[in-house]
Amino acid sequence: MAATTRLAALLCLSALTLTACGQTDDDSSSDFKGDQKAVAQTVEDLQKASKKRDETKICADLLAPALVTKIKTASKGTCEKVLKDALRDVDSWELDVKKVAIDGTSATATVQSDTGKDNRTDTLTLVKVDNTWKISELGSAAS
Image (cartoon, rainbow, N blue to C red):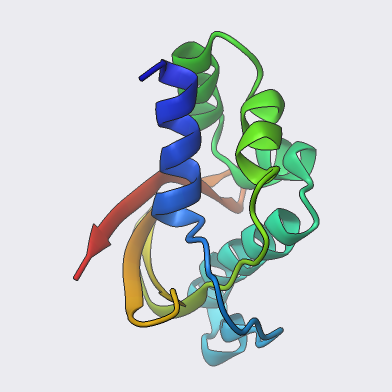
């Protein structure tokens, strides 16, 4: 499998969990305060930008520079091109932030999605870049 395809699959199936059923516009960031709310808001912004297929916003504003570099290196193309390809076939997105943990300038957000018959839980890692939380790792699935 080519690096671009692997990366697109990671983007679609890991942190940006594809959902096949009902979609809501609930903003789970309102369940948090302070920096935890800011972390959750970044995840909400990722969900919104994904729905709009706004790969430029995702690459420029929501992903940490190191992750953008990793995407470019793995795909030998631009972050925007990889995301455009990854987002093309997605019909529906829903991420619900369940938990946020902060340790200095790094954070994790536990997110849940309804994938139809079961809920899926993933963990995103974020870093603070110039006073803004950005996604630094797309996470890992947990059962």
